[in-house]
Amino acid sequence: MVDKDRVHMPTQPPDERKNNFKEVALGLTKEQAIEEAKRCLNCKNPPCVTGCPVGIDIPKFIQLIKDEKFIEAEEVIKEDNLLPAVCGRVCPQEDQCEKSCVLAKKGKPIAIGYLERFVADYGIKSNPQKEKAISYQLSAISSQQPKIAVIGSGPSGLTCASELRKLGYKVVIFEALHKPGGVLAYGIPSFRLPKDIVNYEIENLKKMGVRIKTNSIIGRLKTIDQLLKEGFSAVYIATGAGHPMFMHIPGEDLNYVYSANEFLTRVNLMEAYKFPETDTPVILGKKTAVIGGGNTAMDSARCALRMGVEKVYCVYRRTEREMPARIEEIQHAKEEGIEFIFLANPVKYIGDDENNVKGIELVRMRLGQPDESGRKSPIPIKESNFTLEIDSVIIAIGTDANPLIPDTTKDIKTNRWGYIITDSEGRTSKKGVYAGGDIVTGSATVIEAMGTGKRVAQVINEDLRNLDVR
Ligand SMILES: Cc1cc2nc3c(=O)[nH]c(=O)nc-3n(C[C@H](O)[C@H](O)[C@H](O)COP(=O)(O)OP(=O)(O)OC[C@H]3O[C@@H](n4cnc5c(N)ncnc54)[C@H](O)[C@@H]3O)c2cc1C
Ligand code: SF4
Image 1: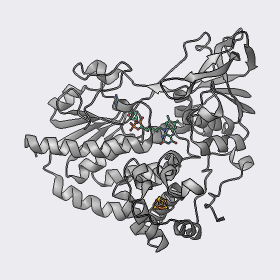
Image 2 (image 1 turned 30 degrees about the vertical axis):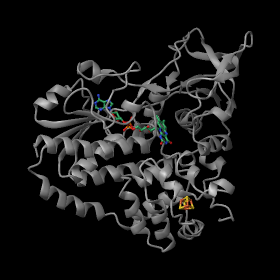
Image 3 (image 1 turned 60 degrees about the vertical axis):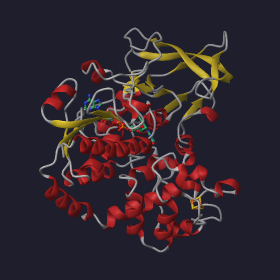
Image 4 (image 1 turned 180 degrees about the vertical axis):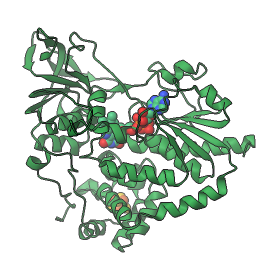
């Protein structure tokens, strides 16, 4: 359906979708996409492009949709974005390109994300062999080229690997987990990002000649120094920020208190929702509390619901206005029946005689002055504690850097939070070693991680050319 403002994304009805892991947003039809594209003013100095972290030529691809040239539209996006089917689904467009769209000033912005997803899906359905053809040409020209190690197969590592491969390098990705994709594989659930989309892009990368070695933890299997000694001319570290954070309050070690990382990995990567058909279970009980207000919290809450929990609470210490999660995800969570408890924070988890969590003691909060994040800081209200009965808890208050690589590579400098320090072009303090994505910026977005991966690939190429190792 198209109204005069903006196309609506069709979705599975809430009562149906809360019982399955199938994609919630169903995608636009060709007619809807064209109608929406027609609303675009094709601005001469388009602010939407400035709002896009990788500078996609948005008016150009939208014009091609108007002209019904969908494959060409996808090609325009792919010049700047390796994973349009992923970004069309998970990018926070409301804070980026769509926020900058001129139409947002007086009405509703163009649904740029929906259009991106439409052309990407159209490309996947109609032209699955395209990347294969490119791959054979690439393999032929590059067999004598230097090799580069990429550590981590999330969006940053995948993009850097793809760019380096296109520049003619041999590229090997080392991935700690048994499946590549990073957060796209283990974090974001299939009802937001179907795994066949991620797998399709990874298969394309393999067809281009990139080798992906899974079950390979760098820092354990071998160190970065060993990789350099073995003949890798450069190393790109894209290990993300997947180390779960805790509040360090009493009871966090009780049974059925999960970190969101563990919970989401069990559900998404190990497919616990298919247990016992799969090997990994996850036990939640009837009432679950998710602590946090970001995308990870929304994903955890909505996964818990789909795992059969009767009542899912989302406990957040600020108000809805300050929630970092995407607006669409908050809306979808509400429609599905997640109950939000705002302005409350856990003080301790309460256990039974068998060390199973049975409740949370929460304190009411009020908002004070803005803190360093720019959001109003939450302040506990004295003697306002109350108890919430639950059978399980998922802690989704954020993640930080895993110290393994800096600990095993002494000359890589990190900041006080453990993130790797780079210059503005992605070079670390160690020669030949580069870094990008969440391991440098802290938890950010898919498109930002991809953007750095792409830029650093160019820098690696220039540095190696200057060294004349090519
Ligand atoms: C649940 C969840 C939902 C999110 N939702 C969104 C969203 O809707 N939109 C959005 O834009 N962003 C979202 N984000 C953030 C986004 O996913 C990240 O910013 C992005 O994935 C960062 O990419 P990356 O490549 O830097 O790292 P990651 O995606 O974290 O990938 C890092 C990879 O490195 C591997 N690794 C780590 N250490 C080693 C090692 N020592 N050796 C080998 N491999 C290693 C890890 O196993 C992982 O596969 C979400 C994040 C989470 C956790
Ligand atoms: S700013 Fe909005 S209307 Fe203008 S070109 Fe971009 S998407 Fe189209």
